[in-house]
Length: 130
Image (cartoon, rainbow, N blue to C red):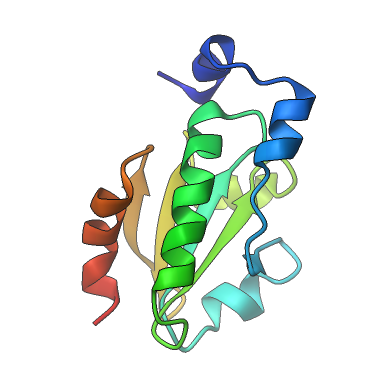
């Protein structure tokens, strides 16, 4: 299902969105993307999401948990709101959300699509933590 279809299934009132909004240490925008992502000396995971997207809201706490558990000296994990940063979503061909892109040396090294359990996300990120 697309994110818009999920929002038709899940209760997505403004109150729900506000209550499930995740506070990440790293929030990426068009203003800081070059310096914080592309020029980063360590791999960066960018979670492309939107506040109206049900699966994104499900993944939010999982991504935050993973970000708190991994070694911040080895990998940086953060979020990018596609509604507020449409040019970046288009540039990287993000056609559905949630989509996570792993950047290494300024290039996309991996693409992780959709929602999944924490264990599955950790497995997909493991090669980038070495």
